[in-house]
Image 1 (spheres, rainbow, N blue to C red):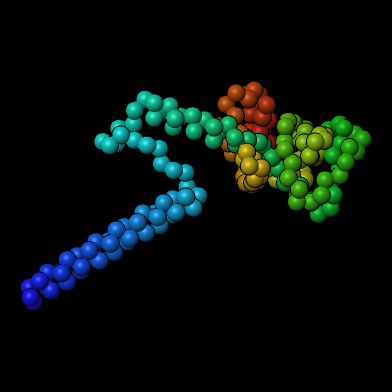
Image 2 (cartoon, rainbow, N blue to C red):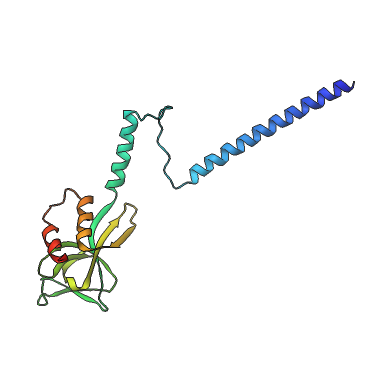
Length: 183
C-alpha cells in the first residue's frame, strides 16, 4: 500500500513539475518577444541556418540601406554668430536691400559660397546674402522624421561632408571657394 501511495505521489509531483516547466517556458518566451517588440533596434534580417546571406536577403538589406540614406538630407549650414540680429540682403554687399533679419543662434542653409566674404543662404523659405563674418559653418542633417541636427566644423570639413552625402551635387558649388576661405 505504501508503494502505491508513493507512486501516486511521484506521478503527481512529476505532473506538477511538468506544468511548472511549461508555464515558466511560456513566460520566458513571452518576455523575450515583448523585449524585441519594445526594442528600438530594427529586427535582424533572416539568414540561413549557416549564416550565409542569400541574394534575395542581400537585396532586402540593400533596399533598407538605400531607404535610410534617401531619408536623410545633408546640407552645408551655418549658425548666426552675431550678438544681435543680422541682415540678410538681396545683393552680396551692404548696399543690397534687406530681405529680413536673422536672429543670433539661428541655423541657416548655405547654398552658395562666394570669395568676396558673402554667402547665399536660405533662412526658412527665404533666401539672401549674408556676410561671412556672422556665420559659423557646419553641416545640417535632417532625417525623414523631421529631426534636424547641426554639427559645427571647419568650412573645408563641412564641404567635404556635404559632397560625401551628395555625390551628384555639382562639384563647383563650394570646392574652390571653400579652400580659399580656409587659408
